[in-house]
Image (tube, rainbow, N blue to C red; front, side):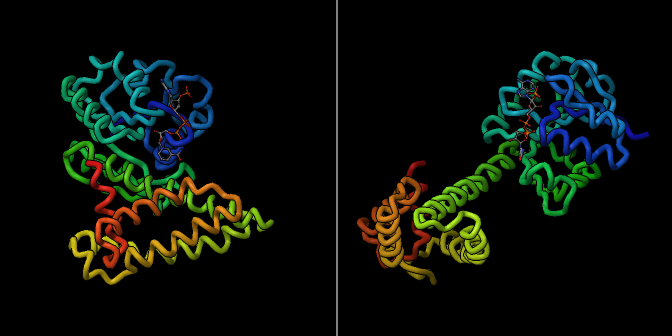
Length: 289
Ligand code: NDP
């Protein structure tokens, strides 16, 4: 008999995770702080619990998908004693140290803890392009693969509970800076009456093609051989960035996004590395450790 899975947190993401489990025929109990968000899941066959205590009755797996680290504690601290001996998979976004803190809290209460970070939006849950990173209790990962794999591709990164979150945060840096760069470009062409939609149609394939450069940058960083790098030099990149700054200012666009990149490149050139590969930006960034 399949024991029932408890879902705590029925926001956009928590609901998508629970819906996928229900659609696969898994008995599920759902709870949300604000009542009324569970209706659609009830129609799919979920048992709707009025309280967290009621939701965690039994011995099944518990899935958390709440807003943040603080809300996780708000939900699980009051029921810690009832969670002893249970397995909790936390899919709430946290920092690596917050994940480690939650894992330590779980250990204190004899709870098995697996941390997960979702690299997808709710509509992607259940599709093969959804990826979820996990770290923490390996047995919990293996034993629950059937459920985890319903949501998308499941990648496990070892017993250090912070490692899934670290990768998540690092990937999101790339995403948010790309979004900001795109919006900067949209502001430039927008100043001359070009719509953001038209710009997006051209920018999308260009950025996709540029991701082909990442493996080369990574190889240079891993080899720590910036002098022999088969890529544009810092001097070349500096000239390009200087033009971008000028063109932006001429278009009346703030260079708050672009200027820090230009400054980093200039600092590396001032330190004598102008002929080396642009991947040296990595060295400048990791200096702040
Ligand atoms: P929503 O804002 O839709 O839902 C947040 C959920 O957290 C709600 O169920 C809310 O309950 C609950 N909550 C917030 N504070 C508390 C609290 N103090 N006590 C109890 N419950 C609380 O967010 P999502 O569902 O979209 O996101 C959930 C997690 O998934 C986040 O950590 C997010 O970073 C992560 N994620 C989301 C993605 C997305 O695209 N949406 C993508 C990748 C990860 P209530 O209804 O009562 O407010």
